[in-house]
Length: 141
Image: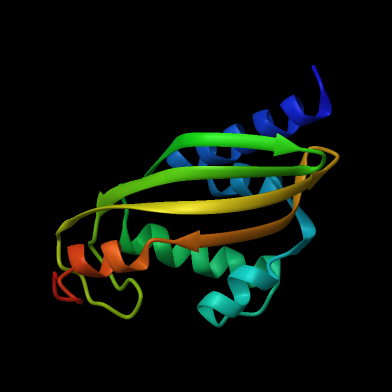
């Protein structure tokens, strides 16, 4: 198996354990010194694993039935790009919006850089407009 295929398998595993909300297995996928600077700027958190742990725990509290479906995945060198669909029910504070109990389904595009089978950098963009509309926080066109 090529290194690119191994990296893709590692990212598939990351999302599989994410679907199980197996927090210890999630943290095992990530290097302790992972660069979260892209997510940190976007969500105004420190670019550390500890901050990411709090962020992800808060997400699972807000969307306790969250499910990630990989739609596309491409690897080149030490990087893996993935387009995923995130589905669940908005049952807690998410993006400063109180629970609406509405279903949500939106897209994330992520870039993950890996070394030794662990994520060492994570960048992501989310379809926030779709998410906010589904939660009733932004009017439809």
